[in-house]
Image (cartoon, rainbow, N blue to C red; front, side, top):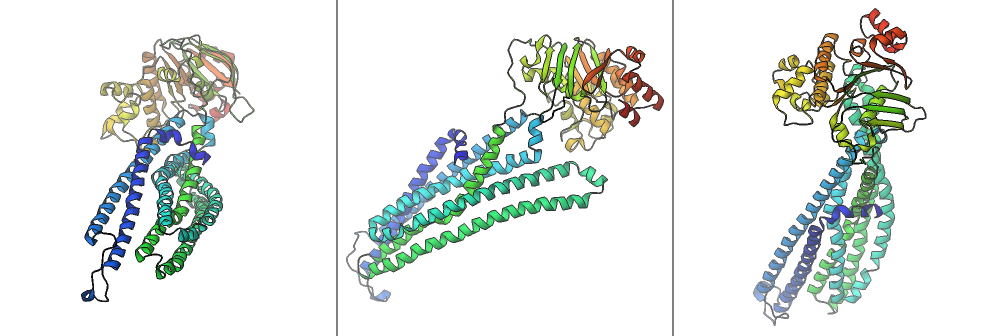
Length: 599
C-alpha cells in the first residue's frame, strides 16, 4: 500500500468524480437492500394473504403489511430502476477518473524520459520503457477503474448486509461472522505470494518487449547474417520465461478464486440448517429467510471477488513502483540557468582543462582539453575511433554534462545557459542519421512544421538533396518509413543535414555527416556551407581530408587529448598524425579502411 499511496497526488484533481462515484455507489447499495426487503415483504404477503393448494382454492386472509402485492411490486421496480441509474453514474465517474490518471501518468512518464541522458538509457532499455508506458500504466488504470469499484463493493456490501442481517436475526448472523477472519487471514497470506509473482510477470514482460524491440530494429542485420533461426530460439527462451512467470501467478490466483467460494458455501450451509430450523419453529418467516439469503449473497460478493481484487492491487503496486523508478530518476543534465547570459549566442567557445569520464568507467575519454574557438570560425576535428570526438561535440549542447574543467560560451559558463536556448540556437547533427516515419517535408522542417515550402526546398538544395527529392513521385510528401528505412544511407545523411541547415543557427555542429556521401556531392555541400555559414561558427567532425581542408583550423584528437592543431598546410608541415592521414588517403584515393586504422 505504501507504493500505491504515491498515486494520491494524481488522484487529487479527480477527487470530485471519485467522491461522486462513492456517494452514488452508497445510494445504489441502499436501493439494492431495499429491493431485497420489499421482495421478502411480497413473499410474506403472498403467504399470509392466500392459502390453498390450488389457484381455485386460494382464500384471502388479512394482509400482514398493509400493502397490496401491486404496491409492493411497483416499489420494487422503483428501487431496481434507481439502483440501475446510480450504478451507471458511479461506474462512469470512477472509470473516467481512471482514464484521467492514466493519461496524466503517461504524460509524466514521457516528459521524464525526455529529460534523461545516456546513463539512464544504459540502465533502462527502450523496450522496458514502452512496457511501463503501456502495460504498467494500464494496470494502474485498471486498479482505479475496477479496483475502486471492488473496494466500494467490499466496503458497502458488508455494511448494509450485516446491518440488515442483525436486524432480522442476530443469532444467525453471529454464527456466520466467525468465518470472516479465516477468509481474511488466507487472503493476507496469499497476497504476499501474489506480490512476488506479479513483479516477476512485469519484469519478464519488460524483457520480452525489449527483446522484440531490439530484434525488429535490427531485422536487416539478422537477415543479412542468416540468424533468423537463432533469434527464434532466443525469443522462445524469453517468451518461455514470461509464460512461466504468468503461469505461477495464475496458479496462485486460481487457488484463491477456488477457495473463496468454498468458504462462502459454509455460510450458506449454516443459513439453510439454522435458518430453516427457525422457520419451522415460527421464529422467522419464509420471506425473512429469503431476505437473509439475499443479504448473505451481498456479503459474500466481495469474498468471491477478493482473489481478483488482490491480484489487481498487487500488480498495480508493482507497476507503480516501476513507474516511480523513472519518475524518481533525476535528470543527468541539470537545467538551472543563471539568468545572466545573453539572449543571443554568438558562438565563441573556450575550453579550459576540460576532461570527461563516462559513468561506471575509470578511464577518461577527454583529457585536459584547452581550446579557444572564435565566433564565426570554422573548426574541423579528426581523430582515431574512440578518441573522444563525438563526446567533445556533445559537451557544446550539454547532451553530456561537463565533467572536470570549464566550457565557456561567449564568456559564460555553459551551464548558466538554459538548455532550451543552447539546443535551439546551436544546431547539432549527430553521427547517426535518425529520421521519423513522416514525410520528407516534416523531417526537414522538424523544429518548425509551419515553415514555407520554399525555405524547405532551399535547405534541401544546400544539402544536395533537391534532385533526389524531385525524383520521388510524391516529392516532399514522400514517406521515409520508420527510421528512414526507405532512403539510402547517403540520402538519410543529407536529409538530417538539411534539417540542421534550415535552422540557420549561429552555431552549427556536424558530427561526421559526410561519411555516406560521395566526394562530388560533398564538395557541392561544402561550397554552399561556405556561403551560408559566413561569419557563423561551424564545427565539423570528419575523417576525410577533402572535408577537413576547408576549415580555418583543424584539431587532431588522440586518446582524448589534442595532439595537433593548425591549418591544413601547417599540419602537413608537421609530418604528424594529420600528415599520415593525408598521405594514406592520397595513396588510396579515398578514405579506406587502412586510413581509418591509421587515424
